Image (cartoon, rainbow, N blue to C red; front, side):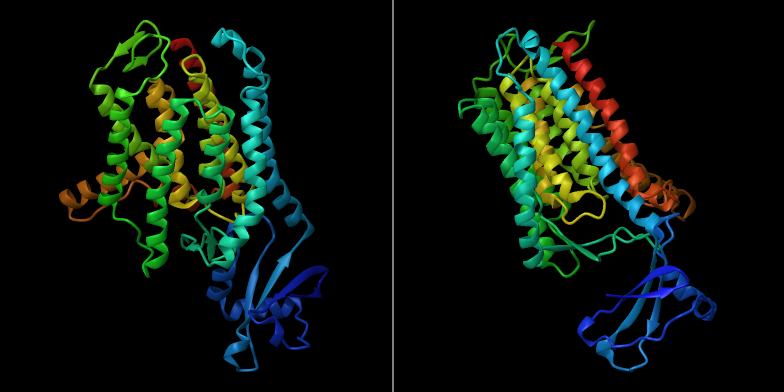
Length: 453
């Protein structure tokens, strides 16, 4: 990359083969740039960086006069100081805000968690597993992400017309390979390998991660980027969820109520015994949650941040029922946040199906072991909206095509976060709004869960 002065701005020359880049390149004036733009407006439009929005950044392609195919094209980017400042705020401000919120919430719960459990608890009962997992995952990412990159474990970036998702066309995937095991191991270690609830939740989390791993592997090996078919994936998820439900029926799960298969709800409903329907509800949640998280995993940091908030909410609501599960939830939340530092805006890695399905399975396991299905439903509101947009789009298109002969769409594209991008909202703004909404939903879920016990 070389820099040349141009009317007071800094211009960076990109060349696909820097070792063959000519020693000298004619200086371009603003007038020359405008002439090039007028000669090929469509080319200039296609190269404009729409993802940067109001930030002054443009690109123009200049064909090499050498005539050699290996020389490719020169790309001219305009970058100002304001651009760097705004990108720094975007990349770090969102995550610092999320970290501050989670830290304050966990410390607040640690201050009087013993009053909820009515038993003495170790200091920093929820904060310690959270920060332990977060630090370990962050450090592991600096080792694993370059390895995934060198191994060419890449997935293509979805492009929406002129709206670009990232400056890279591909990104390393299967990030779940390093953050999911750390979250599970920290939880098991901090419960001293003695909690049957944590062991069951950890096992089903690993199994869901295995299903996602197969899906990711087949996607990488396929020319058209197709993994497991939807039917096979749902069948595998349903089999794991059903197996966990039957294990749950026979396992000696601790319960303050003296019996299992109960769903705590706010008064005046109280405790509801579902009996065998509890097993069906458990299987349904396992199949649903994995796909909900997977549908949300479309923007940098979106799924990881929402999952961290949902895990913290579940860690709070299961505290009066099974305190060991709270450690599991806090540890998985920390793992998601540690991964988020590598998956923030301009992500260096994505979680893939390995991570998204594992997150869904872990959340469903926490709800199944405690009966806290309603709080999980509330805290997953953003993910439910994403999945609902897909269902609405397909149903409306099919109905209008059947009635009028031509299908119509409610949204520009689905899931909903891509509709917002095509509507003009920038990616960091969408993620920020999702974090704010998920924070409010998580607080509501935690409150409803605590008053239901």
